[in-house]
Length: 279
Length: 270
Image (cartoon, rainbow over the protein chains, first blue to last red):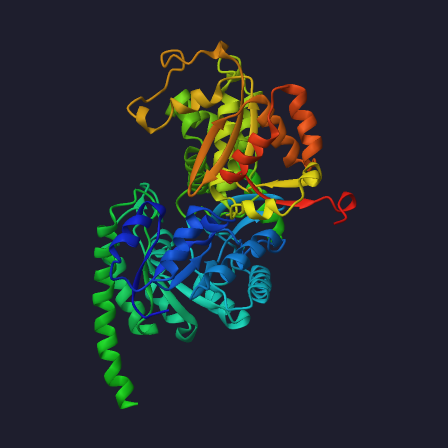
C-alpha cells in the first residue's frame, strides 16, 4: 500500500472516479458489498483495481465471536481477495454474531483473557484460510463491561503480538472512545506497537447528546486531526483513509479531506527522510 | 464472571427485546444507565437493517409510504433474525413476512412486489455469463435436439404472480419519484387484469423485468429444473398448444437467456 491518502469507495462515486481518474493514492471498499458473484459492483471494482491499489475492509467477520468464525463468510472473503488481489485485507476488533444470529454491527468485547484467546484463535483461523496477514481495526464503543480486566490499548497490542496480525489504527475511534470512557488517547497511542501498524483511518463522528457516535457522516473533527499528528509521530507515515458512509457528500469533499491528510503525511515523510539518511 | 458466549447470547437477545436489557448483564453504568447504553447499539443495529431494506425494497416503500415502511421494517427485523455477515442478505424473507402480515388484506399484491424486488436484487449480483454461440448448437444433429438439456443464465429468475405486479412495480420507478406514496388505483393499474409470469434477468449491468407468454414461461421453468428439451416442450404445449419451440429457442439463445447446454449422455451416442 502506498504511504499516501486514500478514500473509501462508495457506489455513488464509481462512475465519477472512473471518468475523472482523481489523484488519490488508493481506494478502500467494504468487502461484503462485493460478495455477489458478478454484475456491476464487481465489474466496477475490477476496473478501479486496474488503476488504484485497493484495500478490502470487512465489517462482518466477527473476530470476537465466542463460537468461532462463520465458514461461509470466510470463504466468500477468500474468493473476493483472490479475485481482486488487494493490498490489504482488514476487519474489526469486535463481535457481531453468535449462534446462528448475525447482528451486523461492530459490538464491543469485554477485555478479558478469555476474549483475548478467542480473538487470537479467530484471527489465526482467518489468516490461515486467507493465506495472508489480516489487519485488525480498533472500534468505537459506547459501553464498557464490568468484567474487563485489560485496558483496551493493551488488549489491541496483545492481539497483534500474539496473533501476528497487522493493526489498522482508527484515530477517530480512539478519540470517540476516549471521550466516551474518559481515558487518555495519547496513552492509547503510546501502547500501540508501531511495527504492527499498516494503515490509519480518519472519519467524522456525531453526538447523540450523551455519547459520541462513530457515524462516518461528517468531516474529520479538529481534535482528531491533532490526534492523527500524534499517531504519525509514534508510528511514522502510514497509508491513511478518509471514511465516509452516511450522508455521503460529493466526491470532491472526500478528495479535499484526503488532500488535507496528504499534506500532513507529506510533512512527516519530509522529516523522516533526514532520519533515514542519518541512519 | 460470565463466559464470553453467555455474554454475547444475552447481549444479542437484549438488543432485540427493549424490555429485556437485563439479559445483557455486566455493562458498566459510568453515568449513563446500562439500558440506555444498550439502546445506543439498538439504534445503530435497527438503522443498519432499515437502510438495507430501503435499498432493496424501494417499490414497497413507495407503495406504503416511508412511515409505514419504517414500522414494517422494525417488525420484520424483530421477527426474522439475520443469518449473514452481509447485511444486504437480511431482507431475504421480507416477501414472506409481508404475505403473513395484516396489511396483506388491504394490499394483497405487496408481498409479490417484494418478491419481485428480491429477484431483482439477486439478479443484479449474480454471476456473469457468456452468450451461447449458435454455431455450437448447429453441431448437434437435429434429431438429438429433443435430448438437449439447456441452462439458463445465472441471473435469470422466474416468478408468477396473481397480480399485474410488473405494472405495479413500473409505476414505482424513478419517473414517479415526486410522489411520497404511489397509489395503485390513481396510477390506473387495474388489479383485475390478472396475474403475470415474469422473467427477471440481467442484460449487461441492468436488470430487466419481462412478462412472458404462458408457454414460454412454462418452458423456461421446466428447463430451469432440469427437464430435457422434449419434456419441457410437452409441459409448454400443455398450457399453450400454439407454442413454437423453434421460435422459443432462437429468441432465448439470441437474447442470452439460455447460455449453455449438454446432451443427456444416455440418449446420445454419436
